[in-house]
Each structure stands twice: as C-alpha cells, then as structure tokens.
Image 1 (cartoon, one colour):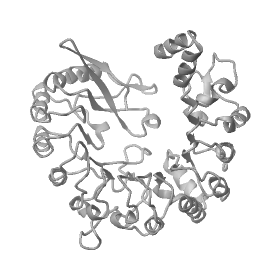
Image 2: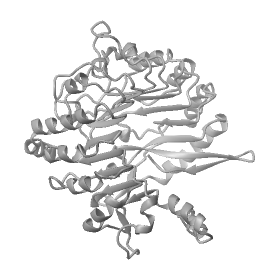
Image 3: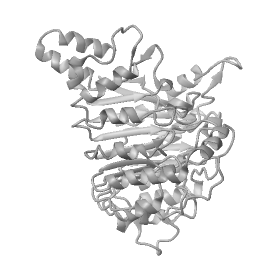
Image 4: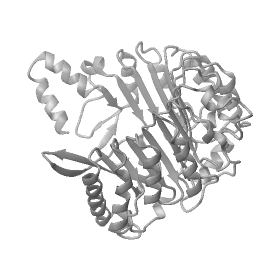
Length: 478
C-alpha cells in the first residue's frame, strides 16, 4: 500500500511520470474493487497499460472487495489491446459454460499469448470453437477446480460426460500442439496416449497436475518422446481418495530409451508420490538444475490417508540423494519425506550436493507432528548445512511444537505465538551460521486449505543483513 501511494504521488509530477506510474499500478489487474471505490471497471485511460488480467469467481475475492459487474467487464475486455495474459478461475459450483463469454471477449486480443483456465468441467464442445480463434497462444493452462469432499467428487464424476470431455480437451491441445511453448493441464482431462502420439516441436515446459490420467498408463520417457525442446517437466499428480493403481514413471530402464536419452537437455524435473520400485531414479538427465521429488495429496476428508500418497522412506531418500549427486549442475533440490529430517540426512545431502542454492525437505502428514526438538538438536541441523556454501533458501519440516491451535472448539484456528516465537529464534540460529541464507521456511499446519491448497504451509522468514546486524522479518506464507 505504501508503495502504491508513493507511485500515485509521483504520477502527479508530470505527464511522463504519470505514464510510468500507470504502467506500474495497472500492469496486473483483477475483476474486483475496494468497496470504497464507486466507479465501474478499470478506467479506460489505463487500458493501454494492462498486461495481465485475472478474473476470479466470487469465492476467491478478498474481504472488503466487490466484484465487477459482468456486463461492464465483458464490454471492457475486448479493448485491452496490450494485454498479454488472461487468467480465468471459476468455482466448482459455477454453471456449465460460465467461461464462454469471457473466452469470446478475449479471443481477439492481438497481444494475447498466455491463457489459463480453471473450472469444474471441460465437456462443452463450444470450447473448441472459441479456442481455435486464439491461434496466437504460446502458453496454455487447462486445469480443474478442486472439489472439497468425497460426496461431491462422486456426484461430479457421475455428472460429467467423461468421454466427451477427453475429446474436447484433446482437440484443443492438438490444435495448439505445434505452437505451444508452455502447457499446464490436469491429468483428469487427458489421455497420455494422445500426448505421446502428438508432435510438440516447440514445447519447453510441461506441467501435469491434479490426478493421474484414467487411460492405460504410458511410461514417462514415452509420453515426452516427441518433445525435443522440453526443458521443464513437472508431473505433480495428487494422491486421491479413489482407489487407483500406483503410478510408476518407469518400471525398467531396458524397456524404452531412458529419460536421460529422450530429454538430454532437461533442466527441471518434478515427480510426485514416487513408489519404491520406480526405476526413473536411474534416468535423471545430467543437465538437471532442479530436482523435486514431492508427496502430494487431495485436501479433502481430513484424517484419511489418500491412496498412494508416498513420501520417501529413510532408505529411498538415500537412493535419490545418491542419484542427485551425479547431477553436476544441480542447484535446487526438494524431497518429500515420511519422517522429519535429521542431522544425518542433512549431512548426506551436503556431502552429495554441495552446490545447492535451494533446499526443501518436507515431512508428509506434518500437520499431525506436534513434537518439539531440543535446542541442541536444532543446532545439530546447522553443522552439515554449513557445507552448503551457496545456500540462499531453506525450507524444512522442523519440529517446533504445535503449529495450529483452536482458541475455542467452534472458533477459528490460529498459529500459536509460541510457535512464531520459536520459529524466529530458530531462524536466527540458522542465519548466524549460514552467511548466504536469505530465506528460511518452516512447515506449519494451516486452516486456510483453500488459500494454500494443502494442509501445511511454509511459515516463511526473510533474513536481512545490514551493517553487521541480522534481522528476521516475517515474510508471506506460501
């Protein structure tokens, strides 16, 4: 807010500064306004400065805000000739076809290159006609809005025309396959056989999210075999409440050319819920700079274990660290663990991957961990980390005691002051011994599951070094 006020004051000085200020203030806009603001949508004077437009459903707008009138918004959208990115997000209970008017309104924008659409269903054939008008897109996101409870999931799956949905999304993706540079898509919406049999000559980033596709599974090296330009590959599927066979990214290095041969230039790889017998660990491309082996799950029905939710055991994590040790350019490493990290594990990481700049170690089901490590144990964590001379950001599930408390049974939960205080003191311990560290995050249970899209968030702290002094500032949780 202070920054915005400063920019507004600057804009009053001259017309040139005014243009500069408007470009800063309205580079990214949303379809809501503060209640105190009496106008309609964004003033027409700022339209040339808008680069990114976010249109969210009512559930997603912040408190003390009011959503724009739909008609006013739809009239304004075709006039945003400088807009390059549009993000549309609708709630699970939105009616079928809710996105069509917005897609039509932005379909002719001359500068548009990125479109991200998140909604409950994609089984409307009319979507195809709208998308083919946006032939200039180079970045596309088609993802499902998360459903919140098992009965809703079951009813939804009965309601959706699955075959038609797969056909609609398949036709859209095949239309863009030769031009897309970035693609994010829900596994629920695709068949991997279609992805594997289609040529993607320019695709540099592929992110597969939500759930494992429902067709016969193809091994990962086969799925990406026609993506010669791919540099980022993220398969971040969530474990779900429906009984499924576990996902194996590759069962044998001898069946197909290994991933390292198919994508020798891959620089970022993320895989979720790895099973112990998965041979993909033997196929990591040697140019990888980022490796994320994570445990992900649906955030519905607490206290229930999703099928195939899989953090790494103590034995499995050593196998992955040893594989990471063979990647000479690795600077980012994330590992999802069944147990809380230990000094012994950190020592093995620091010996194996001394060039790390970012390290994330998260315990699955951490929201149930209310243990509190002794000060001596916390200091033992620091000793091996001192060998990571380039470490700038550390996120770790550290046992700092209960991280969520209910002041009364029917009231909201909050982060205990004791946890916040201990996190501050622990961050200072790390900051004093790790001179390059800029950010540190500790796992923290949260009641804001919709906001963080998970049961635990990262309680982030920024380390500020000035004049030989160290200060710890609470940063935004993520």
